[in-house]
Length: 389
Image: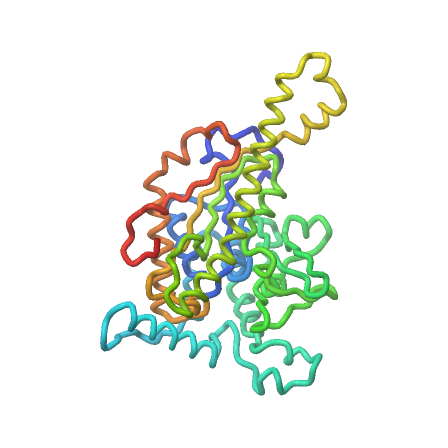
């Protein structure tokens, strides 16, 4: 795969394809469903970037050959989801909300197979400073799962670019573990880098890498979009950004609703901030280039103008948002409700939203408009039953 600067793409469909995966725990099966549907439309990413559960999905995608990826994603999500069926005596949103809360409570009590298990004895009973005293759960099962489902040799052979984000516990600095950058300095991506990206405290313990301890990247930023846009400024990009929390929602009517709404806003606002900031940067560069073209000849070779001309060069970026929008019966526990019924619903929602977006495929095939960065949310105004607007 050629990663040198290429000629500007005439349409977004000819740009480098990137899959950006947000964190969101149990909601991550939405991303797996979206990826499955994108494959139906012959979308194979050259670059996958993820945080938290998005890092796990990204590792499974990048760490397998194309024909094995969906199978491996299904294996992971079927393993971590409880097969308990749902058949409430009284149908409706209220009954389903009770089921969701019960399922999430069971997960909190007993853990998730192949992912995490409760500490015995619990963390408060361990000596301060010990690894066991710093988290409610042990994530060593996840290491074995990653080693089984992910071919890290393939990742480190740079078959597909992989970037996952984490936060230094003591430094507070955000860091990306990127297989392309690692190759240049003789390092390799391993299970510990994926686990670090998903080490959300106080549930999960920090992960030590080269003497530094790391927590979940979602603490600082729940989307890797900013990293992708800052790292690649030459090749044109077509980015499918799969988010698990929606900025839009209804006015809460209960404590559970308020907690859910707060979480949605907290995580989605960072996505919007990064998108808006980068769109403004792109538009500013375009304005600088336009202004340089209007300068009189005697100024065009000025050193300051040469500098501005160089820094204003840019690629074109198309971002297609795929955003999971909660159903009316989902509450604050939706990101740790690993029930099988919820997993299947989230997966199916990802498939459906991609198909809805691809109804507008001509938006991806036509040349870009005047702006050099455009964003689309092609499912936002679709009338979907059971969805919060």
